[in-house]
Amino acid sequence: MKLLIYTHKITPRVKYVFKHVCTRILGIQIEFTTVVEEFIAHQGLKMSYAKQPLAKELFIQSNDLLFEEGISDVEVNIQPWNNTKCFFSVGSKSALPFDIFAASFYLLSRYEEYLPYVADDFGRFPPEESIAYKHHFLKQPVVDIWAYEFKKIINNIYPEFVFPVKTFQIKPIIDVPVAYKYKYKGIIRTIGGTLRHLITFNFSEIYNRYIVLFKLRKDPYDTYKWLINNHKKRQLSPIFFFLLSDYTTYDKNINFQNKHFVSLIKSVADYFEVGLKGSFLALDDVQILKTEKQRFESIFNIPLTHTKNSFSKLKLPLVYRNLIDLEISADHTMGYVSESGFRAGTCTPFYFYDLDYEMQTPLKINPFCVLDFVYKKNKNAVQNICKLIDQVKSVNGTFAIVVHNYTFSENEEWQGWRKRYTTLLDYATS
Image 1 (cartoon, rainbow, N blue to C red):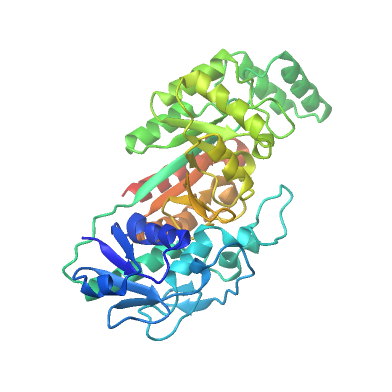
Image 2 (image 1 turned 45 degrees about the vertical axis):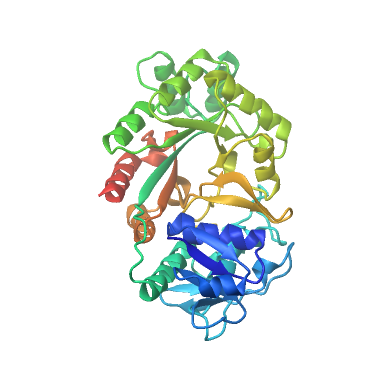
């Protein structure tokens, strides 16, 4: 059974956000009409989205945002509602006290990231600039929470309608900026590293380097077998992202042509999906990104599907347009590096909406809500991350966590993270 939606104007924004809230989150197929007579005659699920209801149907009063074009300085007044927050308040005739669809669109389109803001040192949109951070709802997937409140209203009016079953998922993202700490770095980099540690009297680092190079100990960043075994054990399907850039100030992986590195990527791909970690310079230069994409595809002889940006750098809409131009279909960069939470307000993958062109694009955005760096020295890491898992479980969403291969090296700065991570995986899969 489809939900028929009456609205006075069917815009790309309307179609985009209704598809995400109703179909991707709740599993309801939808149709639109602008014909009053067709809507009134319809006997099944139906709702109106306009300024005034037509009769006594399910009615959500509309804000103007979904009927506008371009970007303007939209007034956003945050109000408490149930156990969360909301904005774009509407009148008492509406089934909800706010326009759930306009508010969801504002967050999903990253409307606020097109407006002027103070960027961080890497040119990124910082969480402190977002309304979610300022008004304390960053830790909630509010779009999904709102959708489930909307579901309750539909259930009350149409109790005979059975919603499709949706289940919670966990999606680990394994970020590999440096495949090995000491191995396969080449003579010049090895000597340079040795001299640097001699100058600083860091003899333990020199010892660690050469005990690995003489094959007396495993490279600390070589955690791939451990990662593969622990995810297979729990029947999880992580995605590994490998950096294939040239050596630069920002990106210092081993040479992309190194046969041991290529063998590593292929061996991981025997078990799980792999993607490209776009280099720092590639994010502003589509030609560099194209070169790195070609390197990836030369290893597998199949088109590149998944990308994740170095430093989680994301400048809208440039970065996403570059991915679309190169026919890349999925990105995993939507999240913050200094705060956990839901940057786009959702824990359900969604499609990038280009506000300049007013169109939904084919690029699927897979948002993450936890990055290991945020909890690096946090004694309550497991407890705090479990709270986020609970938030996602409550709306049957996808919990995406980003960790690095070196997170599990058991080096001093990452001591105990193997146990923390397996505890989290067990909690999420229980």
